[in-house]
Image (cartoon, rainbow, N blue to C red; front, top):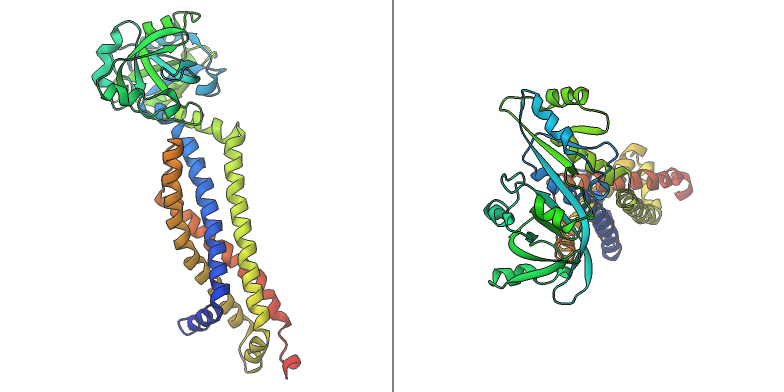
Length: 384
């Protein structure tokens, strides 16, 4: 095998311009796949950051709820009924809803997601929440997500400078008394956290006791799957009982299967793969066609079809590896630019880097296998 690689390399490097075009095409296909997969994973991750932050073991939601974007309320009596199970340590009701935030500088309205919870206990593991819980006990006080989009105004910057920050939410004047970090998502560009009492003040049309999420903490040593199964038998069907991981998967599956966004990103990845396959095929086909006489000569002196196939596939693998590295380098730059522009968690992961490398190699091998069919027409009798 080591004696065959130089022939493949010499074939590729003989035409420098053609090699550069081939590598540019492969890099472009890789960048396209990297960006589509990056945005798809950012979609999934950004929409479950709140779910991951919940400090509990089991979650109750209305059985008609499909995602955070489309939550239906249920009676908190169902949640408190879970306390009758010996394994349950505590329960915590959570309100959430979307409303209009008015930029205090420009006055422009923008939708924002508000979470309401009892400030006596911290149930979300988010930076900035624990140290500001006591402030939420004051009327009309909220915590602002410092990772929200800039369209909400310079809230975090003004607060860090010690300025008094007030804004209008749902036509009610509120005061920002702290910052936390959650981050924008495909569902919400900004977030607020407040107390359950302040939440009901803001949403005066909401009925007290009709909650959106019920969080259950279990006693040490309790098995969440077992307790969840017991609760499903114990509680009425109007309540969906999920472990924390099932709640995360529930939200992720909604974005992957029930919206067009997940499908579009997956389709974009497939299109990138197809584009790369076509580009590499054209390069290798031209390479074979230009050297058809040489291949026929090799056949005439005893080299087999399998040997020539190996040479072409080696060229394909060399193209895959050489084209992959500029693609991944440029993808890092694109991820950084997308992250700064959208505030979405677009990061490179080891699994994705390996996946795209495998897809690139597969793309080039398929192209080589198709292009090598041209070698069958390399008949020594036509040359001599």
